[in-house]
Length: 170
Image (cartoon, rainbow, N blue to C red; front, top):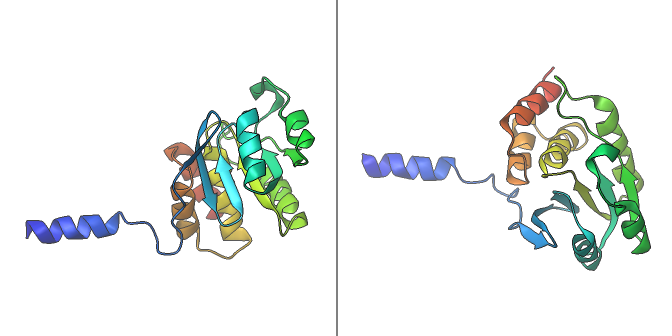
């Protein structure tokens, strides 16, 4: 009986088939770069991380951080490598997630259909939250499944996960 319970537990914690993120990579100071299809979900990159992104074919960088969160000119470095850079601040501290920034990110993604895209914030949580919204709203994935994929790709903050769940299930 104990073996059966252990087996059920082991099966229940396995990632969804077909949606397992590749192993987290280290790019520069960012130790949590995860790839899902053409998206790289990450924490704050440094110059070395942007070079690694460039070497991995990333041509679009979307920062979800506000000006007050930045202490260097990421845009200048990114653009010097030929990467298109967009800054779309996502405030995850409010009671609810606002649709405006997520819609703007999705428009950038739609305008670059063949590009590899890095979406990042400070830790990767907001970027993974966007991924869940994108997968559900744009690719028709069920909200619970989209959130599970986001968890595999950096959504580790339970409070933010709850906000994503509320956003997707109003």
